[in-house]
Amino acid sequence: TLTELETLIVNYCQLISINLTGLVSLKYLNCSVNQISNLDFSGLPNLQFVACVNNLIGSLDFTANPLFVELRCGYNPNLTSLKIKNGAIQQFSGGSTCLFDGNPNLQYICADAEEIPILQSFQATCPVNNTCVIDSACALGVEGFSKSEVSVFPNPVQNQLSITNEEAM
Image (cartoon, rainbow, N blue to C red; front, side, top):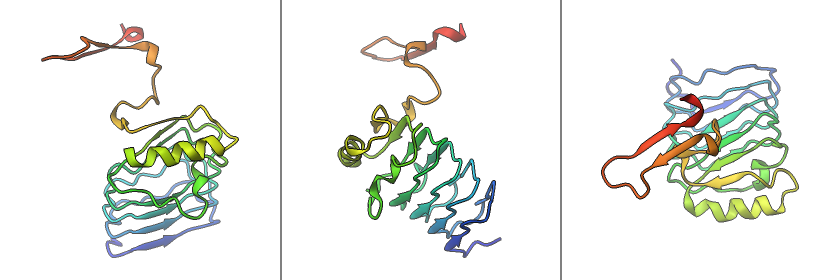
């Protein structure tokens, strides 16, 4: 019922979850230093800034947030997947390398094509997890399956594309 709420700050609260449903006017969220493992940003069309530093988050997805431009998400040891591809270019200000700092398990970042060079630059200078895949193919991200388990044929495709999972057969 807080449809007009634009700013939410809940730092150092030892929260394990936060329900953002219905906060359609929310622009700024800071929920750093908690125990949160999941954040769902769907239904938040005005979201622009998120700070979720020092939590237990496994993945973050901003693909449905067209105004989102700034993220601070360092020190989430469970973070494996990050999707910031939304058509808006990230600001990467103040603590720009937060995408890598303290996120040793980060395996995949999906970003807008214009953001990939700067992310690769951050990755090259960060001593943590230089094997993280950075691309702009969110729909076919590498998280959740091994490339060797999936077959796509025929290639090149003309009228019909088949995708199979060898292990599921």
